[in-house]
Every structure is written in structure tokens, then in C-alpha cells.
Image (cartoon, rainbow over all chains, first blue to last red):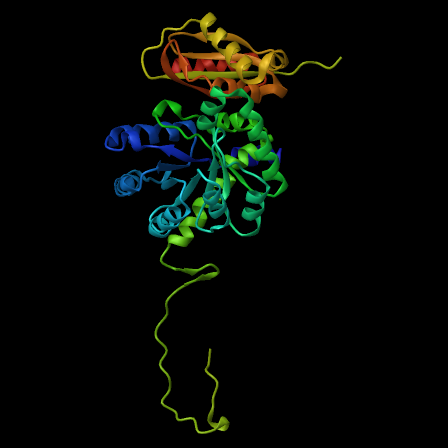
Length: 269
Length: 112
């Protein structure tokens, strides 16, 4: 009974809604957000793969962010050169809420796994590299990335080669073994690609997630990424573990000269 | 013998353009989708059946076994096009009785 109530109280997020194709049409973006709100999402990440759209994206997300639905921004880095990935992370980490890396080479995969600035790592089913033990172990030991399951992208790849679906099952087994959290995203590119949260969870179950894991992958896990990013981007954040909790009046010292330990009077608190 | 527990799924179709699809065509699309995703075994296990479909309201009712709800849900979600029109099939509510599901459908049509 309690579990059912907790399930009803869940807040859902889709961290992969690609809007590059219609970013210049704000009405279409608005319709998309309205649709996602109607379907039951509380948080949406408007995503781009090209950093040149980030300025527009930021402007639109600020304009459309409402109390009902939380609109955040995401940059997906699609690169095969690790140096280029590093440069992009350095430049854009502070500007977007979520950073995902689509690994096109082994070097990028390893970098994404151990770099704390990366939120989501995703892999291609058709080409190397793939999510393996080394990758999972690196994420567990050093990084804090989540494994992304972009549903429509995976379906498109499986549509071309059916045997590939087994590979996703292997990824999920590995993620379970190494305790790498999973985030399911729709990876939708148009208004009619988005799906309701529970439908998205059932599609994740098709890839081998349990019911609870599937629901966590669209609620608890993505929301923790957004929360983590919000904290890091807030002005009170200094470094991991250090936050400015408040600013008081400057302390004025008494004009008492201290010559020896006997003159010292402790400050009254 | 254990009694079969059914679930009734009230759904609606959100389409890009005007959609002219009848109950049989929709039922075929559902069966095709379940078969494609979960295979014949999935189709057999769910015993899914389109009970009712209102063409005007674009809302309907699917019955399936309670343990395999996720199979039908995912199959509905994986339908991206019907009759060449882009669609989203959204499950509005899942009920335990046919009576309650039909009541819900009736209430939706009254509101509309």
C-alpha cells in the first residue's frame, strides 16, 4: 500500500528531448513542453548536440520554466577526440544543467567515465566502444556519471540489427553488478516522439530493467542529476562539500592590546 | 485453478493530423506491436484484446492479464505511426473492472 502511494507521489523527468530541429520556433517548443506536462513530467531537459545553440536554448528554457514544470538545459557531446571533449567540458560545464557524452571512441569513453563533470554516458550499439567492465568500474570508482538508455535511438539501432538487443541486456547486467545508476531518456526529436513516464518505464523494462529500476531511471536518478547540478551552479557553491550558508556582519575586533596570555579574553558568542 | 486477474487500460490517441482508423485496424496494430517487441510468447501471455474503441473521441479500452501490463503498455508506447499519421498512445488509467473502465470512458465523453 505504502509502495503504491510512493509510486503515485513520484516526480518524473526526461533528460533527453532534442530541440535543435525546431529551436527557432518557440511556439513548437512551448507545445512540446505543454504536451510533456500533460503526459505527467515534472522536469524536462531541452537538449542540443551543437554548443552554438546553447545561447538560444538558455533563453528559451528561462522563458518557459514555470512552477508546474522545471525546464533545464542539456548539452550532449558527440566526439571521438578526448582533448576536444575536455575543452568542451571546461567551456560549457558551468552553462548547462546536464552534460551527456556520447562515446565514439574508447579514449572518450574512459574520459567520460572518470570525469566528475560528466552526468550521462551513452553508447552506440552498432559501433565500438561499448559499455564494458573497465568502463563500469571507472564510473564506480572515480566518476559520478549515470548510464543513459536513449530509448528511441536504441530502437532505431535495433531495428537495423535485431541481435543488438542482447547487448543492452549485457549493459544493464554490468550496471547492476557495478552499481552504476541508469537514466532512461526518450531521446525524442519531435513532439510526437515523447511518451508518458510510465510508458517510458515500460519501454525500459523491455531492455531488462525491473519495474522499480525502470521507475527510478525516469524519476529518482535524473532528478538527482538536476539537483546536483543546481547546487553546483548556485552562487553559494564553493567546492564539493563547501557551501556558503550565509553572510553576516563583518567582525570588529576590540582595540585591546594583547601582551600576554593573561590579557586574552575569549570572544563572547 | 487460480482465477485470472484482468486489467482494463483506458487509453487515448493523440495524433498530429486527423486520424481515420477503425477498431480492427487498431487491434491489428496493437497485435503487430506486441509481436514485434515481445514475440509470440508475449502475445500469448498478455491475452491482450481491444475491447472498445471510440473513433470520434479517439479513446478506447484494452483488456490484458494483470501481470503483463508492462508488455501492453510498452507495445502501445512503441506505436509511432498509425495509418501514416504520427501518434502518441497515452494510457489514461488502469482499472481492475470493465465496469469502472467504461464509466471512466463515459465520463470523459461527457466532459468533452
